Image (tube, rainbow, N blue to C red; front, side, top):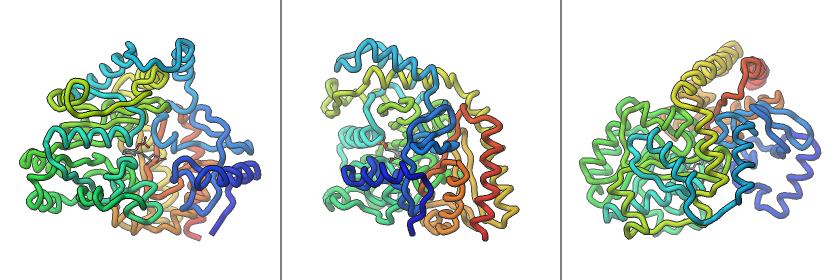
Length: 433
Ligand code: KE4
């Protein structure tokens, strides 16, 4: 059912876009398919707010799917981009700033001796898995059902995010040859992990996991689950890869590994470390990273890797953050908002499950807690659609899919928190009408 949530200019531009760009979008999840609507075409962002081409204003909790820890167009990020651009947009050569960013990342993540900068989270995870296969001489990889790690063929198997949203677990075009080397295990199922390693352990190069799932909605790890993954991978000589593209510098300074105390062999980063520009990274133990060309036999490359403008934006974003204290404050303020929304849901009789870690949050319209992808998929999608649509009508921009996480920024004010809670009162009532 198509519903119109946006103004005439968005409708016109999106209609014309769909004639030139598949689905009218350059990334599927932006199409608002689950909302059955036409997406807002955005003109600008300022702080915690977006303005669309019809002049509609939205309080933003998507924040470009995570990167904007300090909101849109933060003056210090914009200035860093302008200064870098004035010296040139790309050199294809070493620059000092990429060393500075590498040192910030390695100091924030003790598990990371060395790091390689790339242009997207997809590139980071794809490269980390190639490196894991090179380092172990093995072929099989493990991912979790509902985990999303970007769109490389080997990882579009039982993927979350946009793939889950469209209801199919594999993408067309992913040949069986690729899919058969990827083993899919239920998230938070320690016994299943033990069993898959017992059956295939000697052939498993790596297990890649989002330490806090953010692409089936937000689902934290069960107590002991990540510790179990560390044990079982070590027992079988496989590498443990934390995909912290979303959680890195989002849930904590460094990443979730600095909260849970589990040390991965490799970590993938993205989003926040690029400050809204195309920048991601993968890194870890020196003995593994040194196998990368030109030092070692594992090839990975990129014309714009370590791009000076992207690196400047990422450094500015991280320097603005400063360290763990920023996340402690963000979590306190975010909890006030999520608790306020949960209170409005309770008043309206809407079953509402929510999670907050640092500046990342998530919710499900569900009577029972969500602990894995099947229980996420079993949440009440129709009432989610009504709730989410009414929040957007009320000027609150939430992810247009139930299989996404939400985010908070230092740009969100106490008045913004009250605005969101008030909008939720209307949205919860509509979802239970
Ligand atoms: P990119 O290739 O989109 O930069 O990163 C892929 C990726 C890898 N790992 C994790 C944990 C991720 O969340 C992502 C990308 N996240 C999605 C949103 N859930 C990006 C939004 C989109 O696909 O448009």
